[in-house]
Image 1 (cartoon, rainbow, N blue to C red):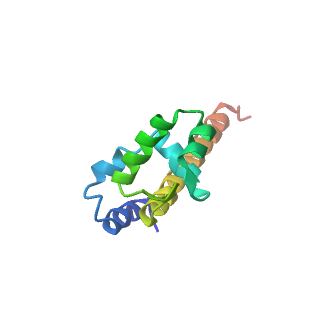
Image 2: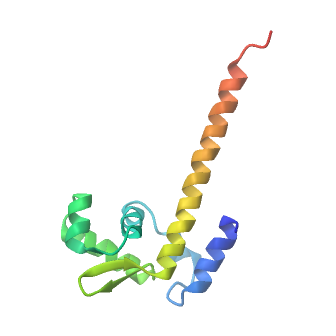
Length: 117
């Protein structure tokens, strides 16, 4: 599945996310939290400890990404929703593509500096 199609599928999965604008706003610390939650549900306290941020700071981000439909709270635990898991996969694909593109570009630059005899 291409990354463009995956994003369209992500949006279609969620009734709480009506536009790409919402998912387009996900960046920075929010992505850090999504990657931490991919390993399984975690308590707010644990996320604050891992990230070395205050609980209110982490809670603000968790609440926002819950509003995007990416996380949910069950008791004391925060976990990814199905949309959150799919969005994490999408981000992972994008990240890997960026790394691969950078390596290819670095190789081209290196090869262009070689002197051909």
